[in-house]
Image (tube, rainbow, N blue to C red; front, side, top):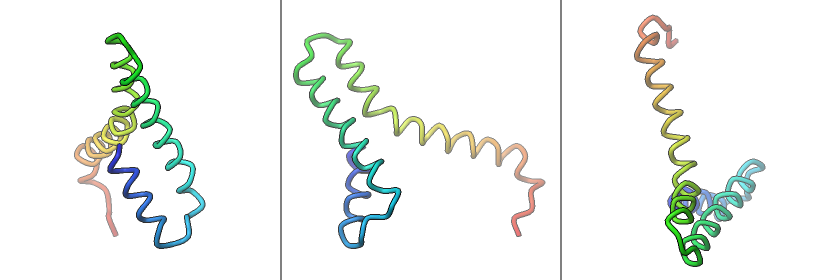
Length: 83
């Protein structure tokens, strides 16, 4: 998650911020701050699990989407035309 934030922030620092970049950047920073707050101030294992879900969730969704795309291309992609 921190890597995604730094990639978006460094891409936006040299150039003007693209119209669709600001919202995901703010959302990821908010998720990171919420996860840090839950880890520091939470006293149970449930708050730690929620913090892990907050920071690991977006990465799991992107990875899952890539996995579904890869599965689709491996099953039906051999008949697809790429030109």
